[in-house]
Length: 100
Image (cartoon, rainbow, N blue to C red; front, side, top):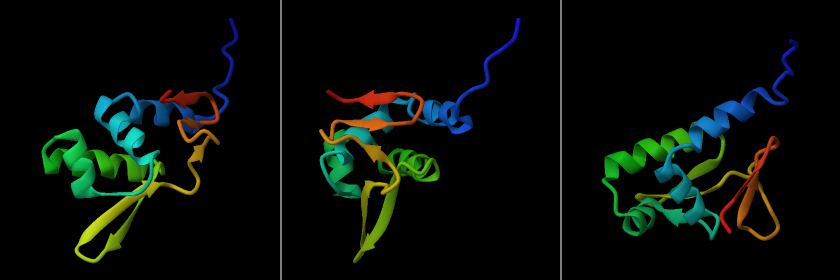
């Protein structure tokens, strides 16, 4: 039996990153627009250190970007993240992640 090649080697790694509910919740918040870390923390009500960990994983995956804003850090969806026109989904190439 021949196995079909995975269409995108990054697809499996992205799906692994997105398998966490907290990271999905962060992305859902950022689809609505850029937010400071404190604003994300306030909406999700999780420990700051845990949020920082999840944001780093999302940054490393290329899904979000951080920008220093005075003493705060502002997060937004990465320019390369293929957000759909509705702003409620992300096209991962191998599939579409919808928050509708």
